[in-house]
Length: 312
Image (cartoon, rainbow, N blue to C red):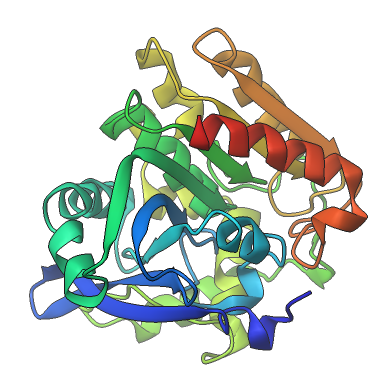
């Protein structure tokens, strides 16, 4: 089984940008199995988590160990985009990035991939979209707003389906006390007008940014910076669509960052619009990161379900 330090050892990595905001380019990465030399390759788009406040696409610690063999055995090309982050940007900006990413995916990905993989054909008929936490929000929003009938399946790991908040979760998040309002004010005081942040690796920056999202949720201010329009969140945006691709949601019963009841509520809303497979297991936020599907029959079953939808 891979460790965080070896997550990407079996892949060639190719990096470009899918858009620019002023002079700031927003990065997108391709993970290509080293064994993939020719033929047709299904596509896997993965959005990173971090509460829409922190995170970066190539941060290996947030890529679950089971994702690697899952992609390798299917010779899948995985596309990992960044996007603008709160509070320097807002929810409308992030949804604009999401839309622009999918335009790049449709119009420019093939040419970029051909420059590195001349013998490989990208299979746009078999697209899986996934994401953990905030990345799950973006995966679901992709299906709801962009191309709900063109994805084969969605995989959300403890996805944010509603706004980030602490209702019913207490004062401890993933083993750490929820910061006070001073953390928010300290960060806001450092912000420079016009500066865009689209990548913030937890390993490269002070823990204060990692705690910022928790503080925004704990102090009831996350929505202040994200926005509250119904189309920004899967929980309310799903009301406006008639159909969805098959959706697998994995969530920990004791999740102290994203309430499992949100996944239950979303699944109830979505089940009339498509297949929804909600799997709730014991554990906190990120409970599956070090799991191997061969050691977890429930995980093997869930992945076989979504794999069948993706590749059918």
